[in-house]
Length: 318
Ligand code: GLN
Image 1 (tube, rainbow, N blue to C red):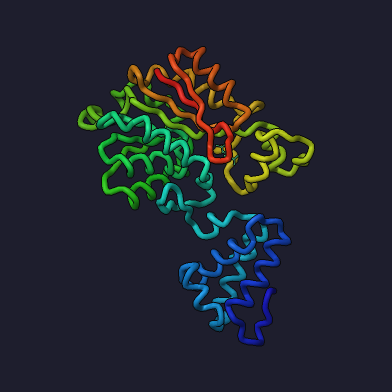
Image 2: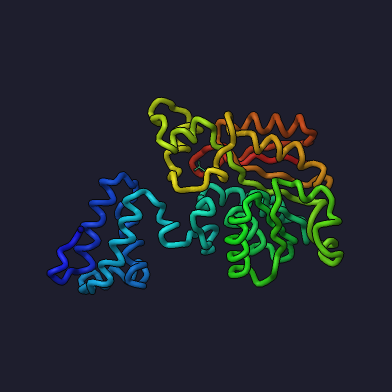
């Protein structure tokens, strides 16, 4: 216990004790984690918490905080504990059914918006949508676009649906589909009035597929040690991912590209001429993905780097 319940404790002392414990448990951001958990417990913003640092906490509040802290100490991501994660300036609901939206993926949204800037009312599809963060951010930034979302996980679609309903002021189609399988034809998918606007041919497909390698997944499960490998696609990727996230959203097979290969093979048939495909992947996979795109018949390909200089988004023109 970080505090002695017999005494009245201040928010500040609870914060300090929690910070030490979280640090010991191996978090890179112990102070921020503690601040977020405590401000959530007290129902105040982080800024308000500073002003209330000397407030005495009630026993109930301390107990509530400790149960959140316990979850963090067991390695659960803050986003799952708080039930939300910021992405592209929007607040997304998240839980164990979906991957926590990463700042890395904001690059994909940036690139998509740039490429779509000269096209009006584009048809955009976000495959492997998970929480919906990429597609919903695009739909939010471009209300004229006809954005649809899909995922193979029915569980994740419940979250995407919740996020779309809360964040957007228009309804968008959300479909259960293994990659683009259900989009081979537009006929069976939805009523004629939607067919005119949503579905193939897509002017853009976005996808943050599962792309971790079998090796990464073994590191995640604690079966092998991360230090036995040194490429970015290895430990740098895997160490960031807490074991509580769904394997379905992460596991890309032996070289991490099983899903990417299948996506690329099936995407052209659903795209309009000069449409774009944008795929997120790890730095070390980017050149191979470019090659896969060219082999599949994409006319132009390109790679975009994230803020840390990593090749992160691979694109192709249909
Ligand atoms: N970007 C994630 C990571 O932290 C991997 C996500 C994915 O497989 N799509 O490595």
